[in-house]
Image (cartoon, rainbow, N blue to C red):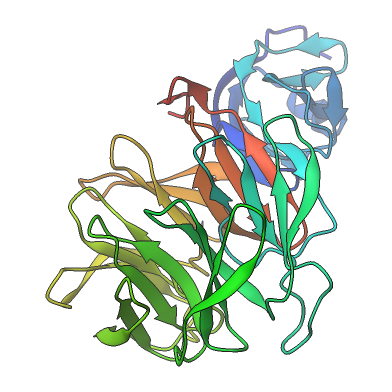
Length: 340
């Protein structure tokens, strides 16, 4: 076997949740012994999915103590490139949308359950120290989460067609009703709540809990996911029966405009401080999180599989959910993302 140095040129994307697929561009591999190549995350070596002389496909492993990635072929190691691996904060949950983060850095998520099923605990709270505690009960199929201007947590019930207001002690009271299959939630700067009825309606709800139709969209297979940008327009992502999804923005007059196309199973979304929007979706057949810049450039920046939601924390950290767990991805310091 040759001792030619192995050079790892790029890793795409540069962050991931376990199970996510990565592309490693490289040179210097011995073409006669490609079968012994390994992808090394920190000190953990894993078998690639595919190896060619210039490209290796790898999967992010279960453990989460990695800060670098390399390629190994026998005793020969490539140079190391930075890689950020998500840490699992809590499991045995059932999120179906994005988590919510309060001003203290606590993360809230759900046990949503199957349709119509009443679970003993509807909401869970995860502290910055990683403590997981029950937070609220009595909400059937909790789905969307959002903090209101009053500091209270608002939770949609897709089974009851309602939105609940949950106080700091976890006590839930009805806030708005007759909202269809209520899923995604978002507040505008005026304190009005927007609710996505996945059957085809976006409702605007006053502070007194009175809804009106704001916009019409195609029905979603699962849910509408909502977020407001700094331009004061409402952004919505949603999986469609066709399998090809897009991100839309809805202006204050209810007009709908397409922002990003070519997504697959588009779900949770959130904005960073630079007004890039991050969407849980598939692109070019691979899952994870896609970043769309204000200019419309789309890049898969996080590798993952089965993800449903995401939310930014106080210091730019990103919290991600799949249908059973919550993860934390440390993107940077003081909100400056490390993702290329």
